[in-house]
Length: 397
Ligand SMILES: Cc1cc2nc3c(=O)[nH]c(=O)nc-3n(C[C@H](O)[C@H](O)[C@H](O)COP(=O)(O)OP(=O)(O)OC[C@H]3O[C@@H](n4cnc5c(N)ncnc54)[C@H](O)[C@@H]3O)c2cc1C
Image 1 (cartoon, helix red, strand yellow):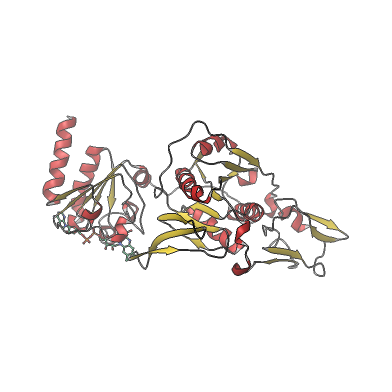
Image 2: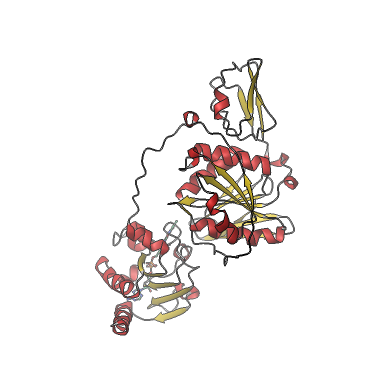
C-alpha cells in the first residue's frame, strides 16, 4: 500500500488534517506532508478537494507475505455487549493461530469499549487493540474502515476474521477493497494449510451444490466473514491476561460523511428468538399446507422453542421469510433441532447442520436429512408430531 501527496496539486487547504485519524499530516511551506505516523489508511484521499493525495494499491504478487503475522478478529458491539459472533470468532481464531504459532488479536472499536477486554481475553484473545472515540460509538462505514485499515497496514496480520452480520458484511468488503485484499464471505469452515501457511476458506458455491475451498495465495491479509452460530465459542479461561494496546485516534465529526439520526429496529421478537433459541422445530413441504404449521408451533411451544422453516415453505408463502433456515436464511446452532417433513437439501443443511442434536421426521427413509440426524423417525409427521406434543404436555401437566 503506498500513498503520496502530489505537491504540484496541493493547495495547502488543510482539509486533509482533520480527516486523518492518526494525526499524521502536517503543513509545511503551504503543502501537506505525511509524518512517520502515517498508516496509509486512505482516510485523507477523499477529503482532498483537488485530488492531490494518491493511494496506490500494491499488486498482490508484489506483497511480501512473510511480513504478515497473527490472526485478528474485528469485534462487533451490539446493544452494549460484545456480539456472540465475536466470541465465536475468537474461539475459531484460537484454533487457527495454534498451528501458525502466532497470537490472536481482537480489534475493538467504539466508545468505552475497554470494559470488554477481559471477556475477550477469557475467550482466547492474547492481545486487544482498543480504539476509543466518541465518533466510533455507533458503527459508521467511513471511520471504521479508516481506523481498521490503518491498523492493518501498521501491524500486518496474516488473517482477519469478521462476523457476517449486517455491520460485518458492510465493513469487511470496504476494508478488503481499500487494502487490496481478497475476501471470502460466509465461510462455513476454516483451517490452516500449515505447509504453505495459508488459510483454507470453505463456503457453499454454485447455489450450495458444491463446497468450494478458497485460498488467497498472494494478497494479505487473508480475510473471511463467518455467520453467527457457525463457529463455537471456547470455554472461558479465568487465568487470561491479554495485552491491551490503546490506539489514540482523532476523528472530526465534520469530516465524517454520515451522521446517525436514529436507529429503528425492524427485527421482530420472533425473528430474534430463532437465532438465539436452544430448541427449534422446523417445518418443510411435507406439511402440505400453511395451516399445518400449527402442528409445528404447538410442538415448539410445548418445548419452549422457536419455529423454523425450509425455503420451500417460505417460497410457497406458508410462513414469513424470517423463519427460513439455511444458506439464504438464518444459520442456527441450537441444542435441539427437529426437522419435520424437510428433505435435507444441502442449502437447508448449510444453516442447521452444526446443531448439537438433530431429530428428523420424514416418511422417506432415504431422505438426506437422515444423513445428518442424530435420531431419525421414519414416519408420518401428521401422526408423530401431535403424539410428541401430547406426550410433552402430559409430562408437564
Ligand atoms: C441458491 C439456493 C439457495 C437456497 N437456500 C435455501 C435455504 O436457505 N433454506 C432451505 O431450506 N432451502 C434452500 N434452498 C432450497 C433447497 O434446495 C430445497 O429446495 C428446499 O430446502 C426443500 O424444502 P423442503 O425440504 O421443505 O421440501 P422438499 O425437498 O420437497 O421435501 C419435503 C420432504 O417432506 C417429506 N414428507 C412428505 N410428506 C411427509 C409426511 N406426511 N410426513 C413426514 N415427511 C413427509 C418428503 O419425504 C420430503 O423429504 C435453496 C436453493 C437454492 C438453489
